[in-house]
Image (tube, rainbow, N blue to C red; front, side, top):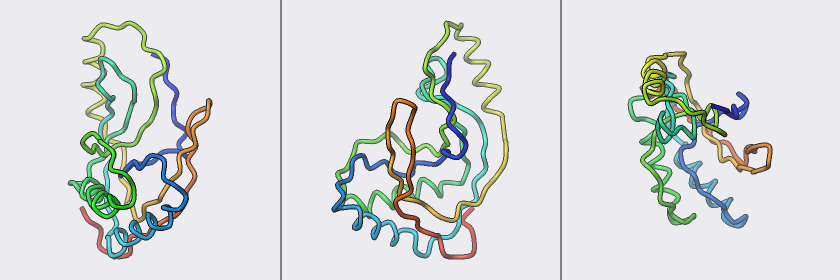
Length: 164
């Protein structure tokens, strides 16, 4: 399969995708996100497992999984609650904490058993941990060479004790 790998400096976790946000709403969106971040504790995450969306039989996205005992999902839901009056509500899939590693551009014909073997082996990988202590409001700029990300605003989690 041919994969377009994401550059490491572009790795991120999408807590909520807003789509096109009119310039006049960015300040309100930032203010709402600042409230969400205020008083949040850093979140300990473990990178564990590699998977594919929608699945290994028809991979479109290859991702690294994150284990965090639900803290990122909780944060995503809180962001939704605080921002739904500012930006239109988009229909979204259930939140799955992950970092996109690559996008499949072309699949080579392989048997289902090969895909199942790859998925079984990759799901066992554990490769590090990290403390997340801030979230960013990021603009995605699409180009023929792939998406570029620009940080519009940053929001530090202030409390000392991490959520596990």
